[in-house]
Length: 156
Image (cartoon, rainbow, N blue to C red; front, side, top):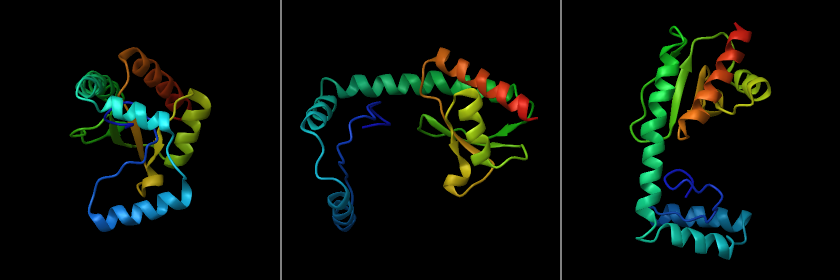
């Protein structure tokens, strides 16, 4: 519910997949969680209803279509600091940066000094990368990238 529908607070735990995978996931779910809340299930079912689902997907697509150009323009203004492959269908980009700093250290500096959270690439096994979400309004992204830039300049 979090990515495609923009409803990350609805932790309903639904999964679709091969029966043996679903069974394995279900065992892990039973070990860690008793149940999703009735309200979360009700809201998720409403979000997936024929009247609401298309509106939520359209909203998400608009955030992605409008947000990626903001990220792309900002990266292009950084004089070769970043390289990336544009995502095919996501509100998140995995961006390589060309600085001599570990990605967790950079992520922590951005959280602490810029008040911006990005994912550290080494958490995904690839240092010198950041996981940057761009599924936001343009004003939010512009402000976040300005803060990131200020922190990057202080590190240089």
